[in-house]
Length: 268
Image 1 (cartoon, rainbow, N blue to C red):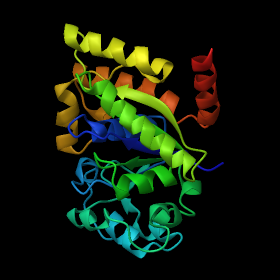
Image 2: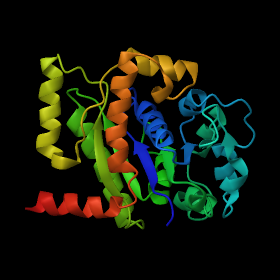
Image 3: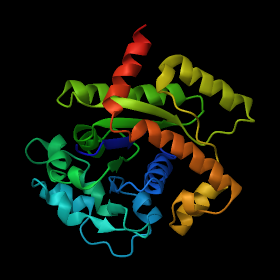
């Protein structure tokens, strides 16, 4: 069975989308799963957080080429060890954010042919906008994880992302579904955050996961280029537990069954 291909997206910057991508990769690695991260954000924060020593081909090159299976040539080792690889990003990826060539939204899907059977999980770290790069991710993915934050605009931003997934499904990727809406950078002591979390749950129901707490350790681990599960602090352990819970929903090979269950439960 091919690995789940998970698009991690948010249509608003600054909500910690890459934090969730790296946290999921760390949790999967901790379970001895083989993980590939495809960095589709020109800021290349995921690439930096993976402590990549030598960047050759990048997602910019892969999307420019567009041939079937060309992504295999761009897979790069990371500082996280043999279980975690990356197709790294670079600033030039900005030039791929406009449609080009035949069937442009499927360039990534074609490029990843033959990749999924080498891994247990593939994570697509999208840029914080609904442009051509995110659309490519949605047409290549089997699952979508929407990252949000407990703010006034949380529901609106999450709803727009969910609608983008729905459109991609309607336009040619019917296997794609939202399996999780992840509130990130939350502080349980703040009444505003608690209110916004309840608001999210009232709109999206069981698709809203447990919140990822705001922890300084997350930024420290990313700055050091190591998985959160390897960072030694109480805050890191708390964050790692949250990502362990999330990986159970996202990376399970029965994720399609979960999506059907969520749909059934919401329809009752």
